[in-house]
Image (cartoon, rainbow, N blue to C red; front, side):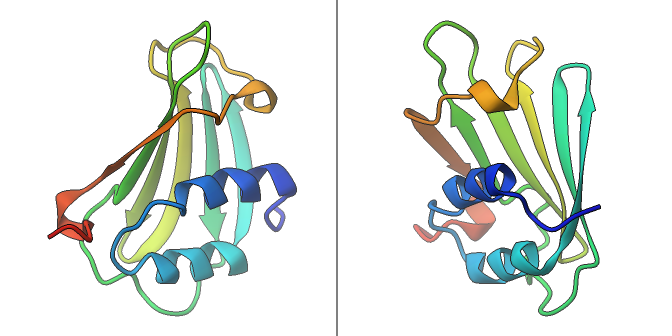
Length: 122
């Protein structure tokens, strides 16, 4: 377990560039959490623990998803999971299930999918 490292922090910062309701609560939770990074076949999971502070007031499980389109492979999908008002994990995987190298993900072309319950466009 460790505090956010530069790479993990950068990935979260890209996700938090999207505008959605009460994002500031999740940002604060991420900053103060302890994380464990798990590498499994084709999936990278950043687990959050030691969470404290304000509870995210929306019941949606995945408030935001980010897709990073790659030049020569399937998009990389980032899904931020929230359980009982607290960050649970950031799940990172290739849309086609292939193995990914987190150090070689291009973040030049991004698309955000925000759950309608927390969209600022409501």
